[in-house]
Length: 530
Ligand code: G4P
Image (cartoon, rainbow, N blue to C red):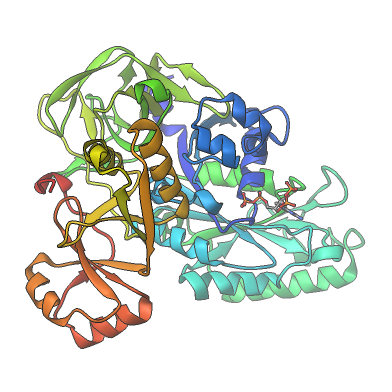
């Protein structure tokens, strides 16, 4: 197979959902279809006893969750599929956001009884910022659900996302009888395993379903199809690939129903790795030099050595173990001799990899999130990964002031690694910012264990952060409202923290000239660390 064909058959995606919508169950079913795991329950088991076998950090074992996400790769229908595990639940953190900046498409899992929920909205925003295609899987159809037309309306109302129906449920809850694949013109029957009805030219309006499903369901289905054919969005692959239209599928991950139809369509329509933007231009997958960027660093693979694993997404060229590349930020030459491929449950040493593969590189502290590695002679920097505003804040200090040095070093390194955001105010208090509570726990644990520094943390009553145009800082100081504060990030960029959305809105109304930014896509290398 040529390199181009190898690239064309790769798919990298992440799953976004609100906790309990069924992300884990769907992931597991996808891996089962791909033959990557043999028994159901493996993904979940990572959270339980089996997990303790792996070499992840102690805190993960204690809490029985995965702090840091991994990549699962499998082959299906000739495609090489990588699912990036995007941590949810309590382990939701900045990692979750960053992973979404490195995927080519996303699958959005929605609980059919609940519709679009809060965390889905947040993650959706990150995906839509990058205009990546989003495939919607409406789950738990085996249970009583919302009206499917309401589910569709919900997508438009809550997310502003136009959608197009690919598979559609027949019946609801106790009367659920199957799904209709509009594009394949087939019905998959729920109760009869492998029961597939090929519909004729007239689709659901012909007689193929007469006597096969209940008359009541058939009448409803026909009514719904009339409506969707007339008023729904037509299928348009261009729009899907441009991230402007989401194909919608219904099914039950638990019953493994509707999953095959979803997987087949998804792999066909989801994009292969494409061009990636750099600061000065673009890198194409077929460019003859090797390049990639680091989107995640997993710490503590071996606590004794402070080893870390850097996750690199290859954007052009071929990776060969032992190759020498340049770390663009420092200009240093690096030999990539220890590399692993990341699979569902094990790691294998990897000799070669192509565009669209994710590799893990052992790191003794050289890499930072967003770093570019390349063997091109001329300098190359991929566009910086966006920084997202934290929503939780803590003031932190070392319990033992004699250990201030270790404390400072730990704080600086964890900030560089992207484990947590670190700010300071004018009194030089250190303030931590995170998008998930667990980031604080990990911070405290690691400072204690890796840097031998015990810390005291105190919750601060802010939950909204906005970067401020540095030119307006003096003005901001004049008009700083109650229950807000001004801090600086590690590049000395000013940030305003507000107690709530209301305080922020009020501030914006009163000070329309002060420019505030929600996400930063600035080139960090322009900034000197403070
Ligand atoms: P998450 O990763 O998005 O948080 O969700 P997860 O897959 O863990 O699923 C959350 C709960 O919903 C689980 O039940 C799971 O079995 C159930 N579930 C997932 N998909 C479906 C589905 O298609 N139909 C139905 N009826 N249930 C589904 P649990 O009781 O919390 O856990 P467990 O005891 O089953 O493991």
